[in-house]
Every structure is written in C-alpha cells, then in structure tokens.
Length: 481
Image 1 (spheres, helix red, strand yellow):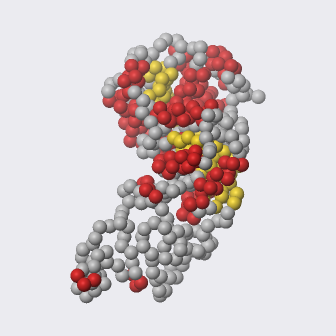
Image 2: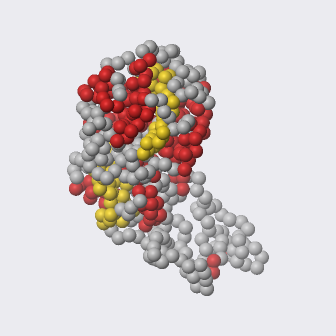
C-alpha cells in the first residue's frame, strides 16, 4: 500500500496528516504529488471529491518549507486561483490544516470582503495566496502586491473559470507572473478551451487523469424524475419528508427562484437556507456554517455552490432545475459521496428541460435511471415522441391552428408555454416576475388564422390601422405587453 511517506513529503507535513487521520493517499494524490515535487508542470483531471486540493497543496507546501525563510513584503510565493468565493475559502481552510504548527502563511482575497483589510494582510507578504481572479486584479492595479516572486501557480476548477468568463482576467494575471514559474492546472472536465488555456499557461506538462472527463462518482445513486414545472415544489417536499434531518442540497437555476423556493420550504416547516449571487459574502458564510453545523439541513443554491462546498455529511442532491451547462451536473452531484461516502442524486425534469437532460446524459456517457413519471416528448410543445422527428416538408399544406395570446398560462391548444428565466434560461418555481427575464425581446404580436398579424390598436370606426389594402403590418402599434 502506498502511503504519504512514500511520496516524499516533509516530516512536518506527514505529522499534520497523521493528526488529521490522512493515512492513505487517493489515486490523484499518488500520481500528482511526486511529479509536482520534481518541478513538472501538470494537467490534472479528476472528478470532485477525489482529493485534488491535497494533490496540489501538499507538494507546494513541501517546497515552500524547503526554502527556510519568510516571504518579502507584498510578495506571494504560491498563487492559487479558484472561480468562487466558497471554493477559495474551502481550499485555504484545508491548507491551513496541513500547515498547522509550521511557519507557512496562507491568505485569501475574495470579492465581497473588505479590500483594505486584504491590503493590510498582504503588506507582510504571503507564502500561499488563494484568490478569485476579479479581486486579485483589483489588488494588482492598486499595487497592493507583486507577483514577481511567485514561483508556483495553480488554476483550480479551470473549466468553471472559463464558463464564468474569466479567460480574459486569467490572461491579464499571467502578464504579472514570471515565466519560470511552475504551473498546475486541475479540472473535473476537459472542454476544448481547456486545451487552449493549457497551451498558454503550461510548459511541457505531465498529464494525470484518474477518471474520464465527465465521469461521475460511482458511489452516487443517480436518477431522474419526470414532472411538470409547477409540480416540482410538492415533489421536492415528498423527497425531503422521506429523509428527515439528512443534509440535502437543492440546486436551482436562478437567484430569485432559489430564494423563493427556500422561503417556501421554510413556510412548510423545513430548516432551509440559501446561497446565491444576491447574497453578501457574510450572509453566504453564515448560511454555510449553519449547514455544516446542522442548524439547517437543506441548502438551496445556484451553481455558485456547485464546486465550493465540501461537507461530507451531504447525502442528497436534488437538481430542482436542470443545469444550462451540462458539465455543471457533474459538479453539482459531486457535493455528495465525498471522502469515501455514498450519496443520492435526483434530477427533476420538466417537459421544457428534455434537451438539457439529453446533454447531461451525453456528458456522463449514460442514461439516468427513472425514479418516477414518464419521459416527456422530445419537444415540450407537441405530442410527437422523441423517436419520430419532423420530416422536411411534412407540415406543408396543413392549415395552421389559431394560437392563443403570448402571455403566461396555457395557449389555445392547452399546451404549456415555455417560461424564460434570467439570461435566456427558464424561470424557476413560481417566479412570475422572471417569466420574461431581463434582456429578453418583448413578445411578438399574436397571429390569427392564416398567419396574419392581429393589429394592436384599431383606428376610427374599429378598422385596423394597417397598410392600404388591409391585412398587412399595422403602421402604428400600441404599447407592447
């Protein structure tokens, strides 16, 4: 059996690991730690919950301890970049446990916290700085720190940083770093853009992959429950009542929808909290602490928490809304089955989310088992089964059925309309205010039989104000809905 001592780590680190009951390294740690200690750049691929933080953190701390002298003022020896505040705090907390009893200083800089306090903390220098890209840029522009002495760079969850649009910030930060640094990149998935980022940052890297990209943990029981959007809340209630008191994570798509769902659960007597982009960092920290200590046992979150929560007690993950980015499914359910435990994940799929479900199944390379309900047709607006696609020209010559108004509710044929959420997504439970979403085009005028536009406003005598000759586009329209 391979032990941490076999990997070449310092006695002080081995002593800290022994106190933490870390007796056996994980596969990613066995493969990555010796390569990092030898100074190689590294591209690491591993699913969440496999010990990536220790895989890059332990050898970095080992090399810093070998230096034997403190950092210079306003300098950083090792820089670790992560996409979310929660993940930054999680990484730093783990590193502080590994360095307990040593002289290594670990600091964090994140948005939502006092930048003046961060400037004061960096004035004395840091051995390891864990940061989000945006706040780091703010501090660099203030000349609050220098990266000229930074010999180690770690990009953790690099794929999510790309998804969140950090690519330009990452390239800007790279200009402040020395060329001779050692760079480590870790990710749970491997989209094409990661290859481009690796070419920009890594030099002749070694590659370590302990799981195929997108492969979910074998210890997670994954299922899908087909339902309608309006029935999701009661369905969630029924699942939560089956496991009272057990820690559960519920993922929603929008900030407002997640907050509304949390309040609904609380009104039903559940102990629930929420974290999302509209919460301040202090609010998010307090909610996570309450979740860790068991003060609340249900946490409703957007994807901001998909990679920033490491709570071994989480046994259930509910995808209340299917993720817009299919890779996020892997990270969402990775919040359970951590540290060798097992877990369960259930995805609630409404008719309008069948496309997202197919994208998720393509990423994980398998079809989810059905927990309840019947699979919806491929298109949420008609009754054609998914195995009978529309043939070119198949509808030619058929009379068009009249359509109902473009507002909320059901159309003329009784088919549910597809709500839209923020940024073009679909609205979460009961969030009528988001049904149209910010930045969406106003609804087009309804069309009557034959496809002619129905005028918004009539002229004198009740006649439409259209072009001469009748049924064209009206010259003047009333206010849009």
